[in-house]
Length: 240
Picture (cartoon, rainbow, N blue to C red):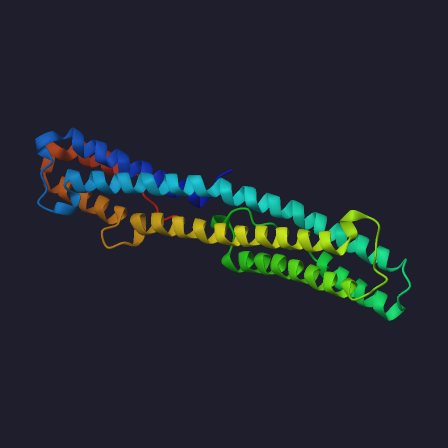
């Protein structure tokens, strides 16, 4: 389900398109001297806005799919940490060494779990950063756990998934996946920034253009009043 802010942005883009349709319908009556609100410039802006939404729509599922995949692998990693510790209790290493394994396994599992972040647009950046740090730390603690058990000659499990070489392979795979997730977050944030700049922040942003259009239509007097009212009826809100 799209967030309220995302729906608001989409509505603003749609209303800008409606505004373009309204002034196009006016024909020769619509003849502003301001080049920024002439039809060619408005058409270019409308095309850019639609393209920015398409860009976001393409990147969002990629990000969400990667997050789900990482969550699945992190769950496996945490179960593996417990299995590694349980196996270490079965071999002839000292209690202090077993406690070292237990300490690292606990860090991999985490005492408290950070809420999954599936959409950067609806979660505070601090929470996103905390979540990412949590995943980064979990993965690196798993690497330290592997190094710890690899230092014990007695650690020679028969189970394939507990063997050092396979644990290292799994670590490399999940680390690569985590890097992909982090990169996809940045890509999605950039795509949303590009849309927001077009709508709200660029010098000739869409909201400013609509306000200029309203002012021009109002200057035309009674003849353009129905078109002016139609544009005014369209609501534009800065959904940030």
